[in-house]
Length: 602
Image: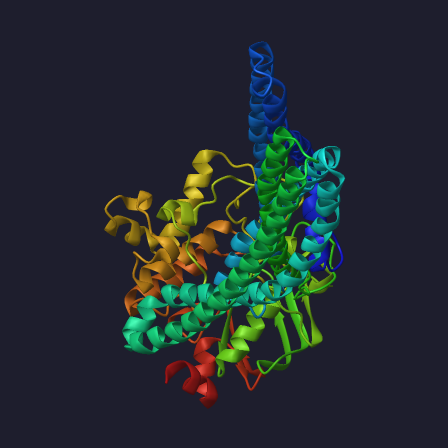
């Protein structure tokens, strides 16, 4: 949607401008349709006066042929105009959905803050649809204006009083309809807010269903959703009540307006000011006006709902990014040396000073899980530290483009998500990315101060290796994470579907597949968080050895309190109270540090 902070009006304006050609075409064709509709009662009146009353068969056939041409024209113009309008509405909604998804997936984040995933999905679907429908509403409103104008002109030519009633009364009806739509706009926004929140809660509960069953918390979850759903229902009923009142009052006003036209036309016919054919035309035009005037009521309701939805979309698009600045590319090759100085973020870290040598496997043990979460957010640049700096190869992370940085420093979170698809689809990227200057996972340059032997690591995804090499990378990653055992236990091997979120797999199986995916990516720097909490001790020890072997020569951080994983690390750092409390090998810390023993072995 562009730069800046768009308002709801901006969202609506850009949505309409983007479809101006289609809406204009649909409006033009619709105006032809409305002109044809208005001509029908006029032509019928002419037929009565010139053919029926005069008993002229030739004229009767002529005017019937004219009527047939008018009907064919108005039918096709309506069909083509409605098609253009619907296409414009759908295209506008699609464009908005892309803009919302683009903002949600922006590497700088922020759009998801304070919103459940279900809420964002509701904004991207229902709200985008309502804003897109504004294009159809504007087109239909143009049709209605053309219909009223054509009727007013016809009535003026037939009778000046009837024409003046239409010309003067229609603006009053439109103004009253706009006033009556204000409560609907407010309640429609509240309805969408509640519906989005209910969707978010439902998605959250479904995602955690297995955990809820394990805790025996189904009843509490049901009560939570029932309360949220009732609030959503109440908001929906209030919006429906406002819409029914608005529609009912507008229709009542419209009905009174049409009755007034018919009454005046009847009196004019009685005193001889109108012929029989003109009276029939006047009554027909009055009845025809019901359509455009009802359209005005519908347009007011659509615009009210569209404005409310546009405001909600604008809130997502204008959300402050979680991290700011940083457009520099990550220099190649990435050595993988990390340095933290005085890093403070929330209640997790309190002035962390940490050096991670390139090409080493480093274990990070914590006494407080919040410290691990804060560290992961800083390294993945989901949040910038409140104070202090984090550097990659001597350059602060906030100078790099976040997307490129995350390709160089991959943070594999403990609660990462598996996608609906096969096991192979979740481990192996569908297409190897082209060489566009982004980090390619090439091996780090060996240091001269005692780093490992610097033997070349295997080619990573996207470095131009052939299919055979790509298959070998996948095989090695699966083997290192012991996800190959998972594949062998499934009915169709790696082609077996894992279900949404990997729900068809056990907790340990999901963890192994997630680890295999991170290893398959082969980034220069890999940060994994508690990758083996749901596997047995024997498998965990094998995974630890596999992890060390496949990541040899590349920077790897394992944030965990698992003794098996910490034992294979070249160096272990204990974060205690948000700061570095001790460091050394696992064996050294077990012997010398009581806090470490409590955190890791207790």
